[in-house]
Length: 309
Picture 1 (cartoon, rainbow, N blue to C red):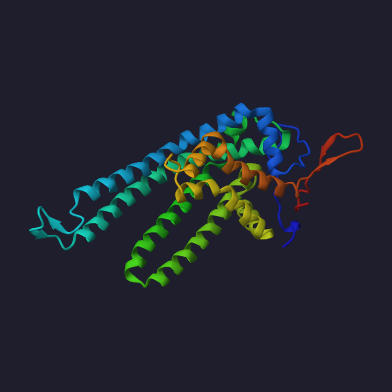
Picture 2: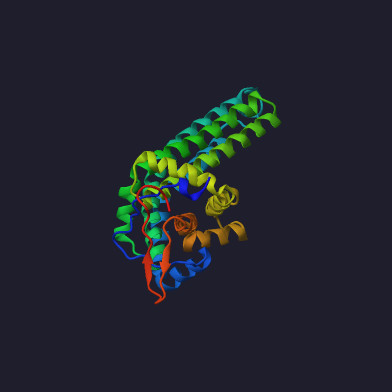
């Protein structure tokens, strides 16, 4: 697969003048932090605010499970041990499953709203990559308008995949041997990761280019396999804060958890869309490079209308 197989037509850059950006992701972040620190913090808190429904749902789930442990006779006996409830573990698992299902539905609703916000942030980072400054209001609205449908469907698919994998593991851990349940869960998780990565590419394409749904799907599929290893690396790197939150937590009970909490409050929520969209913008620059003439002025190379550059 080569560059000519990808179209990426009608770039959404008519509202600004593009500048050449050769900075690495880290250096680009330092430029934005130095020039627009307040706006970086504003975007970070904006994303965090719309993450609160998901956080609250998981806190509620944890509280309900903890309360359940204190109300059920966990050791299988009543009172002073004169009676025994042989199915107490089954009852406990059934109620925990019900709590998890309710939490999954609540998280799905919160994720849909959050995905729209991330669409706007994708567009903010798109423009900042081109002009070196963070502008919020106009690109934010443009991003939501361009990516509303893609974000909605992507959220349903990703959330459904996570929910399905969790349900499968609960079932397989009882019905199958441990090694087979773990192996199948890992395989399904890898498939879900590639599906999520494709949908992230699709959202980046739709935010940056004005094309038909079919062309966006084609270009996103080709881009996913054009450089698969860099795609996987940057996808995992962008999701690192989310992975650490589920693995470690963000409370103050440990030093690592406290540091993670401080990171999230400062730039963590900005980090996720920034790392991914900046990587995609460098990929898109292969098809729409900004050239520099002898006088040092930047000019935009026009993309042929029939096929990619």
